[in-house]
Length: 351
Ligand SMILES: NC(=O)c1ccc[n+]([C@@H]2O[C@H](COP(=O)([O-])OP(=O)(O)OC[C@H]3O[C@@H](n4cnc5c(N)ncnc54)[C@H](OP(=O)(O)O)[C@@H]3O)[C@@H](O)[C@H]2O)c1
Image 1 (spheres, rainbow, N blue to C red):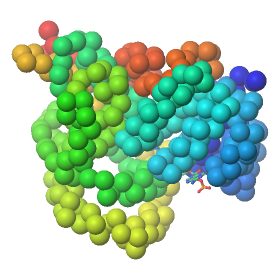
Image 2: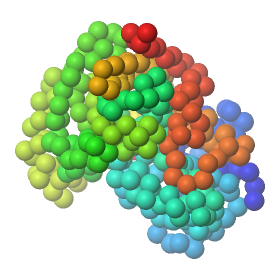
Image 3: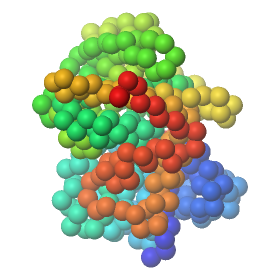
């Protein structure tokens, strides 16, 4: 087996960013996806091998994975694409990485832990913006307050890609989600708000079912977890309105209308927008008496996704793996995020 990785969904917005950065870093991924016509120009321009195959046929998936060490899966929504790729990885003993942020996908992969351990395979979903920085922040806070019983995480979001917007549209029906007593617990969309200082003054944060509601529990064991996104008041009120329109937004005609509108948008932030952009994260842990707060400042979200995903791929190719279902901080530690250029962490009033 060659010590190489297969990048599936390489022709998508994020997959292409990752392919380009990989080449700049001296990596030689095999580019893959379901459409040869879309893959070939990218593979030719980067001088890389490509493999076109659908996820619908087990034997073609197995044949494509048989000679690689790892897959970096970038074709989403992962609620539709993750299962066949995970199963292919288990059959062919290939380590699985993806860039999902979808709670249901994390939970479905966590349920494969025993199978992955038996196969000697690492299943590590969430190697992008969601969840590497927030997962590392959660683990950093937990080591400062090991008795913590509550964790709140928050992030600022920039412009989204078409693929992210499509994934959000498909998730509209699910409502909100938090962890209570270790259990994933449904709550209304935009259930709670709080004022959060990411380092530039207080802003409104609104709860959302971000991936850490699933993963931070596996990383820290903290039983009560909420995740907030910085939201202008107009976005908050739109989210509240969507509580009552969920049935309509989730209906097939409204889903296809929203997806058509998304396809009319640019594929994602431009290079200039990514270079200028920053993301900020905030986390707080508490027990009965103490509270600890830390913040992170990071590059723009899609740039960060490419950087964290490739940092992890490089470790996997060097043999740094832990078999079974994993989270980024469980395998590589809370300080993994500090290995990424442009990331700064600040502890606030944690004396
Ligand atoms: N967690 C994070 O931080 C993070 C960061 C970035 C992106 N993402 C997620 O990553 C996904 C991709 O984002 P993007 O911006 O790259 O989107 P995109 O530009 O729309 O690309 C989507 C890619 O997925 C492929 N695809 C979709 N459905 C497929 C299926 N059923 N079988 C095989 N391939 C399929 C597409 O192939 P075709 O071109 O053939 O349709 C394309 O290559 C989204 O779910 C997004 O939410 C997450």
